[in-house]
Length: 196
Image: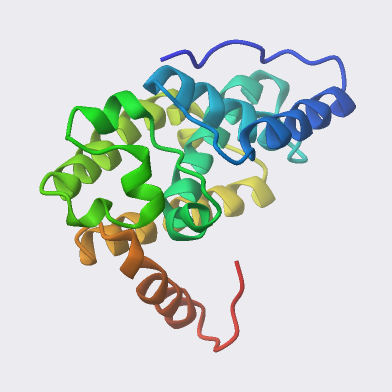
């Protein structure tokens, strides 16, 4: 896992610039993430700087905030698999998919859930790889934070559990995920109009 480089920035503007540069780099049609290491670097580059910009994060927690940002991006990617696939994006690394006889085109074309080992891959990916990412963010997850950050973290962890539970409920078929997930969000929040 590459996570662990580039946590220092001289200013908030530099952090924001890193985030914007990562958006441009990783939202390119035809992007191929070849390895788990490239995947984890992408997670960190997309959401690490953004989380470091959250008001009230103690300077001593900036690295852990980056790791929590990477974990957040991991779950965002799971939640948005159908939407991203429709845009020609697959965030899952080729090396991990190949071990299960799946390729990124299967994900983009929506045929991955039909592959015999898809649900095994997803279960392993969500529970094993997520644990590695969570371990890196553990100090941030367990730390005392200012009230607003504590509330954000609590609701974010709750969202992660909802994503995991919904993926499991649809047997990891991301094509069935959205309807069940957003119904659960509406139920949980007690409203009929909820957006991203």
